[in-house]
Length: 190
Image (cartoon, rainbow, N blue to C red):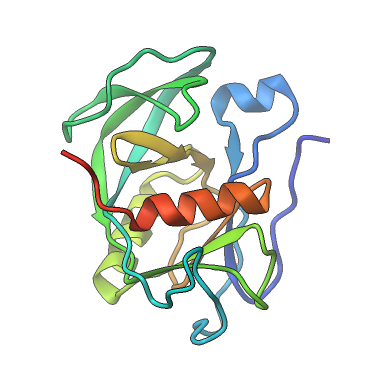
């Protein structure tokens, strides 16, 4: 019941809905579902605030060394080296390796008519596609943490290298997708 199947659609999806069985959650609370991208989604989506093509904030990519479910008290991640970090909800503590790369989406949009409405699309430039491709190749059959503002946004199990744009993050609910999209576009307060 906690297993998810790899997508065979024409868009690349990153399923960040929590798995249901505890053993699967121990290694990761999230699953990566991948497929080849046949086209860019342009003009087919909207953002949580109604803007289109809103640039995103930088996202760190890190290998997950281990994770523990339960209240997290780790401070917000501020270094590029190996460290502990909490997920956004503060319910999982991750031990993370050093940064493999950083990507900054050219745009962050909510899915409209090109897939589930509980998803966020990240359009990446060629440099960021190379970065996520290299990081995901290094993370094959491992969990790759995507870190936003010092917290783990998701830590999916990588089943295949990510080599195209857009990248679609699939969440459990529409409201969660809307909150993540808004957070990814909001300036960090010092």
